Length: 460
Image (cartoon, rainbow, N blue to C red; front, side, top):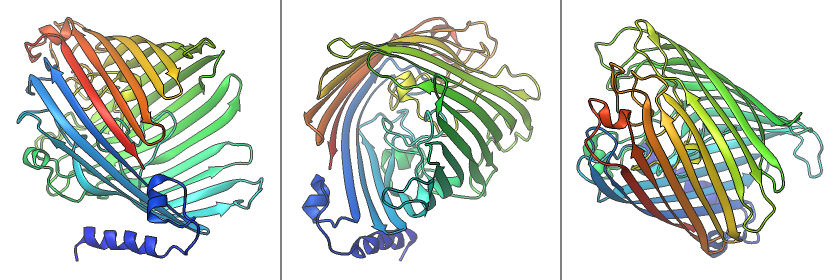
């Protein structure tokens, strides 16, 4: 019996171990007659998306993809210990032979989570003391703003980790998270494997380790405060070349959440230092000193009028690399998500937390209980004219193409066809290319990029 089969047997065994009880609420749990101490959930998302006038070098100028992501999760509450598992099946079909599709889009039938979670502290009913959880095994993490450590939502696959994390919440609501993990390296990662949705178990290795801590204080003057320290280390494996990143990332965040009739804000800054190599080529043995950073500032106001409009303005800056001998300045976003800051990803996604200067504005609306909408605008410059612009891969090493990249306009509409069960999510973006995205030596000779998608999401 191979490793995958053994793990699936363990999942089934945990479900069979549940003692008989009244069925859980929820469509799938109710249909299966699940007992109270066994939680079962599933989601299926089908997406059609298309991109015209590609911004990436060496990728299909026009591309269309149909993708399906199925996730099935179960957790057994056995008193002070909980056993959980989650399988993601992410597949893509119909894309061009030279599509930009990667491991962010395809990861067929993967056991993303398989853990034991141990309660400690005051978990008694009505207890007022601090309480915590220790998780061992495979797991996903959503931490803080999700800009550096996230469980992905819009993306077709998600970040996963194998190791341990402990979280503690005080009686006053302050939280502390500490973790050590090996990031799951998604497989397959070759062109043929991605195009054929090949089944291949993800890899974890001590050659790539990620650890650190995150603290959150819920009530400070003006809102809430978070701080974090992360460490990422990696080295080459027998059949895997890396950039030998050895990075420290430290950061602070102060924020107040949106509320009707009130101002809100979100200010975050992080600094990164350590060592890295400029490429993963076997011949590249030069360790460079890292000095990189990002800042994010956003302010919004939620009106009390009909449709509950929220208008916000934001500014983002992330460092790029100037190619100086012995130095490296491009910020590494680690395991963060970016859809909520910068628009759709998947076949699109030109903007990310690297080599970027970008002010923007956004209007969010809630026309009804089942519907919400958003429209946003963002202008974008390269922070360093000699580095690849953000997530596009477009670069002018001489810097002569300038820093201005263009404008992005995006929109999204979501509507519950059946509340809590079936939702449609549709949206798109236009990247109006200027300067750097037109004049750089490797910029594709295409017009303005146009992208659109439609998701149908079933939640059980």
